Amino acid sequence: MAKLQGFEFWSRTLGGARHVVAPMVDQSELAWRLLSRRHGAQLCYTPMLHAQVFVRDANYRKENLYCEVCPEDRPLIVQFCANDPEVFVQAALLAQDHCDAIDLNLGCPQMIAKRGHYGAFLQEEWDLLQRMILLAHEKLSVPVTCKIRVFPEIEKTVRYAQMLEKAGCQLLTVHGRTKEQRGPLSGAASWEHIKAVRKAVAIPVFANGNIQCLQDVERCLRDTGVQGVMSAEGNLHNPALFEGRSPAVWELAEEYLDLVRQHPCPLSYVRAHLFKLWHHTLQVHQQLREELAKVKTLEGIAAVSQELKLRCQEEMSRQHGEKPASDLPFFHWICQPYVRPGPREGSRNAGACSKRALEEEEEGSTEVVSKNKQKKQLRNPHKTFDPSLKRKHYSRRWGWGGGRGNRCVFNLCRGCCKKRGTPATTSHGLLFKTKLEKSLGCKGSQLGLQEPQQAGPGAPGGFSEVVGSALA
Image (cartoon, rainbow, N blue to C red; front, side, top):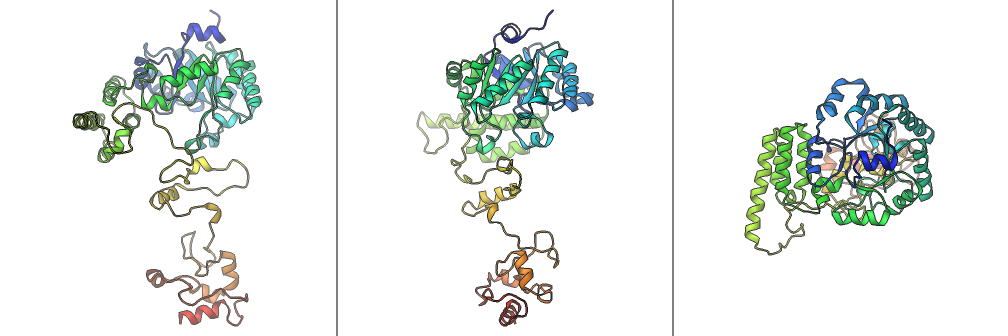
């Protein structure tokens, strides 16, 4: 039988699917896919699989695909990340008998994708992508599809999509954000880009981005003209999104846990799903949040979920329809979307974006905000952690170690400190605050120290003389 292509593939093999659950690393496992299908999802993707590892490791194939084969889990598309045509095709050949299509991930924007050279970081390498898709289209018995991110320019995005179609892509999912739009910098997805792509290609297109409820799905279908709509974060917070329902969290949590018992998966996956489902309630019951993070068995997780259910039911009986005074969502025990705060909307750390989100793509930029500084900023929201203001006050030459030594009392950089001080004084630490000075909260200005007007260690009234007299 000839391989179906384009719209015929979408209508016959995929059943004209309009409601699609996205590929999500460690989150779209079999149990979650089955839960989503029960509540309106018509097509699911596996989590992103690494093509090279899939080819090399039989256990990886078994754990991530072969043991998750289930008659109810169709239609199903297996997604791979890859950057080599031969490896991509080898992995796809090993997977094609267990799915309805093979998807090439060209949309992952994370730094791990940059280091591994895959996902959205291949979007400028059109020759390589053409070879990968063309070879897969020729060798596979199932269609090859792609999931992409957009370029800032609509015209370039359209040409990109047309190139993939010409190479043999039979269905295209367009995430309406650029690769720079991730984490706290996500912002809104551009449906204009998606609409332009849909008009320019002759294959089915799925839209991804800005989907939080069924009304968003219907509006996206209407405004962009796409064949289907894919949801990731919206689905994680409400698996009944495609049904247009917002049930009590415990209903879906209990149903999911039952499915996990039938189709086991790593406990970390289950815990992550419960954190998403109970997201709003866990802001109220912080102690149970800590317990959910600590439990080490599936039954322990189920017990925490049951306790959350009981507390919510008690709160329901007390409220009697009265709106609580807090800013948290009314009826926080109802499945509802989580709106990620934008770069300027965060309550405590609006200016502290993650290290990965702020890492510069251009050459010459190495200063980034570390995770430790993000944590410090959460504790001290008014303190400045701007890397551009960072000074190097430390010196390996004089024995103060790798960046954890004392600061110069005159707030000089390392170079100036070394020029103005003598080895005799610096070797004894006289240019730096002692532990006693630190304990007394003493600064150079309190000691009567002033930055010298004349450079040079031996000048009258110079650096070493002033320090020596002040500390005598």
